[in-house]
Amino acid sequence: MYLSPIVKKDVKVQARSMKICWGVFAYELILALVFFLAMSIIQGESRYSTSNVYSAMVWLYPVLAVTQLIILGLVVPVRTASAISGEKERQTFDIMMTTGMSPFSVIMGKVMTAIVQGMFFVVASMPVMALSFIIGGMSWAYLFLFLGIAFLVSLFAASIGILCSSLCKKSISAVIMSYVFYLLFFLGTAVPLIIYWIVVANLEYSLGTVPQFVESYGANIYLFTLLNPAVYLAEFFAGIMAGRSVVSSMVSSMGTQNKGPIVLLTTGYWWLIFATILFVGVSFLFLWIASKRINPIKGQRRKGGRR
Amino acid sequence: MGACMDMGKRGCDGMLQINHLYKSYGKFQAVSNLTLHIPKGDLFGFVGPNGAGKTTTIRMVCGLMLPNSGDIFINGIDAMAHQKEIKKQIGYVPDFFGVYDNLKVREYMDFYGSMYRMNSREIQRISDDLLELVNLSDKKEVFVDTLSRGMKQRLCVARALIHNPALLVLDEPNSGLDPRARVEMKELLQNLRSMGKTIVISSHILSELSEMCNSIGIMNHGSLVAAGRIEDVMEGVFGNNQLVITLDEGRETAIRIVNEYTKVEVDSVGEHEIKLSHNMTKTEIAQMVGAMIAGGVVVTGFHKQEGDLETLFMRVTGDGQ
Image (cartoon, rainbow over all chains, first blue to last red; front, side, top):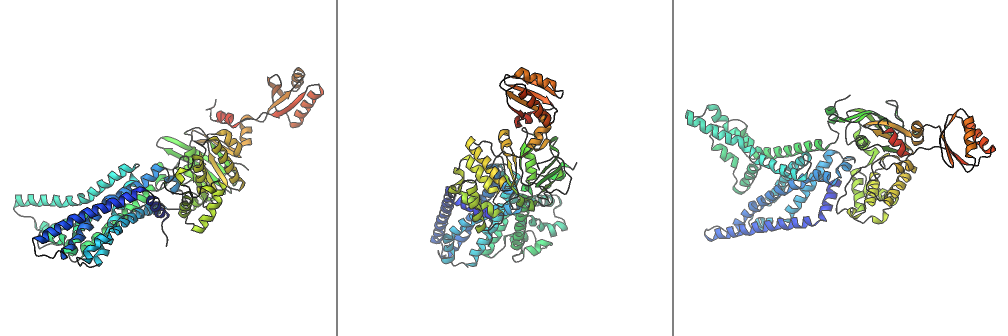
């Protein structure tokens, strides 16, 4: 099996540094704290209710999973944000670009390194995660679903980081820019919804009603949140834990006469499927842009003009 | 055959052919109408003052920068059209480069070999040979960041050769090296040349270039002002008509004899040395020296006045002074 030399080298080099030991330690420590906090809440709740403490253990799954996804989402872009700018700062970038590897292979190598390291942490937490499966009685399929979501979050976070790394000369600027990108995805995708609510509220206030078109198609404004990671994770965990759709509930609250693509997306798992495709697509778009950005000879000739 | 400045646009059988290359950064013209031909097996020295355009040219040759216009052919392959193929033809050693922490010499070679999709057995065989060539065989298990600068520089040369490129390009490889490391680097490059590698090296240390290169190119203000075999460039700049006669006795007689020849002028007279400018043939020179000896002048030697690379460099980059 072909393994990118960049992944092989980076994983080896980083495994030899103390950073990785401290990283695993911090990761496990955070998970342990969250685990004990969750356990104490579960036990406290069971004292005043008739619910079985063992069946309540299933709630460890979303708690620990979300904690891990948040950590991955915060750590992975830091790793990739310093990947290209770090090579430039270390003055190894030019040599890398004169080798037989294409810019896209270099980008993929850096991204895969960050994903592999992120998945190391996730796999290291499996024994704790397994409690909700062994004691709580959850289906093991959800464990693999979690691994899939962790991979997707790592890929998305890594692609944001590597894009910023290709745009910035310094690692620190790339890290800051990565978090600004995050804000855009978390808050930016919610902005159309907020604007919509304000407009509808104003219309209702001034006209006493909203136009029929807005009534029918207004719920499609939720399509912007297809790229909102918070909505995606809420949809995923609500589906697993409660068997319901968060987006469907929100859309239904806007009326029963909804028309347009939102109707299809709020039936079954279509929202999750479509959002997953979108996140993967956006990630690869970022990787492609990053590979174009680091290609030293792409598109420069036209800029200077031919004599 | 040495490097030359002007060749046809196509049909080059040399290692590196650059035709009418231009590169500008905004309004600053870094490289202007550069045309150069370097035959296979040459050790070509690229010299010029800071900002002359050497590094820009090297970066364009190595595919790290696109020219505004012009063509580059490496081993007959169009570098603009076949970037992937060109990468296999070139080994590049930049002026400043870093190494990875926590990576051993053997792993460093292994990493770059893998970047060329070489298999591990092939990499091990070639890197063993290369590390021996650069005298780092005993450092295979040493971490790269603990090596001295000279060793790192030699390792970088070995790294650049891992895929057996036809052309090795070194940008200021001797900067920051101590005298011993410089000598070792010079020997290494001469060894590589004797193995048939074509090497392009840019440097400020002209004395070293004149010792190891067989051809040079001098850049100034983005243009190539002189290029070719070192002897030819020297002859073109200094001319071939200066003669130094050293003698022990009979200086006045010697000057009298010289004055009898119309094609000769005395430039300067020292206690044991007379410098002449002439346009005589070799036979006429021999006759003149013979006449001196016959006239009782004790001639201890005579030789053509040689220019050095420093003087040459100063003259061709001296803005016409």
